Amino acid sequence: MIDKASLSVAIIAILISAGSIAYTSSVIGGVSSQIDSAKKDLSGQITSQVGQVTSKISPLESSVNSVKQEQTAIRSLVDQRIGGLEKSLQEAQQRLAQAEQQAKQSQQELQALQAERALEEAAKKEKAPLVYGVMDAPDFSGIVWPRFRESYPWAPAEPRYIEGFAPLRGRFVSEYNANTPSADLLLQSEAPMIGDLQSYLQPFPDMKYISLHAPAISFPNQKEPIMFSPFLLPAVIVYNTNLLKADEAPKSWLELSNSKWKGKIALQDTRRLETTTTLLSDLQLAFGQAKWDTFMKGLAANNPLLVGSNTEAYTKVVAGEFPIGIALINDIIRQKTGTPVAVAYPKEDVIAIDPGAATMIGISKKAPNPNFAKLLVTWLMSPTGQRAVAETGRPPALLTLDHPNSLGKVVPAGMTLLPRNQDFFKDPKKWEALMKSYFA
Image 1: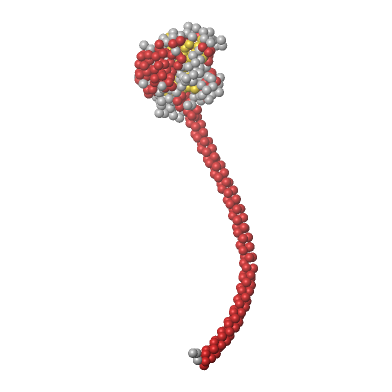
Image 2: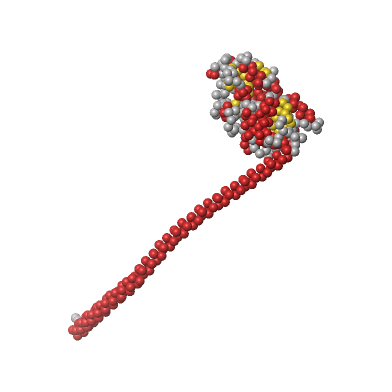
């Protein structure tokens, strides 16, 4: 049973506790209200200060952006001006390089002119060079030499020129070996010049007009320029127009081995190692060994008439003794209107003509008049000299020369020259044996 006194004390204690709690809550509430008020005041102060700071920062940001824009504009302007300066600098450097090149070229031209004048002055102190040549004497004396004197009026009125072939070459060698040289210049067929006679000739690497001529024509198979080709006499197939119509004539080199031409071909004796033999050696290079061997057997089986020269073969065709033959193009160029001979240019297989009789000129190592000889060779290979050669009816070696007798004007467009087979010049004895094996 609960004691009333204790119960009373407990009740009083509870009431006191409740009052304390109520008082405490009241106090806390007041404090909270003060805190909230303080927060509002502080927040307002912060907002105000932030606003003040922001108002101060905004103009700075604007200024910074303005400065950046100005920097960008300045940088763009600088880049433009630098770019312009660089372009101007490059243009100036290019003009300087061109000026230096022109000055160098002018210096080279001056040196060349001085060398040419020095050569001419040295030539004036010598006799006219003696030429052992294969060109017809009337052509050299009546056309070539007068044109030379137009360039050098001080030269003698008459040249010193002897026309001849193998016997004249033998005479030159004998005189040279006996140390009694008489010829200054040799103007001879390509094969003996490159073969037997090359060792008797002096190098002439500074010949002024080398760059105008193709190396294969100017100085074949030479480590340095020794001899030069003033004119080319390409070998071509010719036919008699009274005996054959144009569409009946051979259409290729290969057709010469066709049995339908048996007993109907005239050509220079292939065993003499002259123009026709060089043609056949060049065709070996063009055909390939197997095809060429078949061609040669067929050509030999046709029993062609072997004559002493290409001109003789041409004459046989003109006379109508043979319907076709192999001749040199100068005979066609110089023939009179109405002559019943035409060229059958290849239209099939190897579409090219042969360089044929490429005549070479060289200066003897023991030339009594070496400076005059160099002057004549230089002039002969110049455009002026090449035009004089063309006047003789011979196609000049300068393929770019604009003249009615230039190969570009004589042969059809697109017709090329067969490349030279250098093996023929390196080992002529082998080729002599080959020709004898086919044409016994």
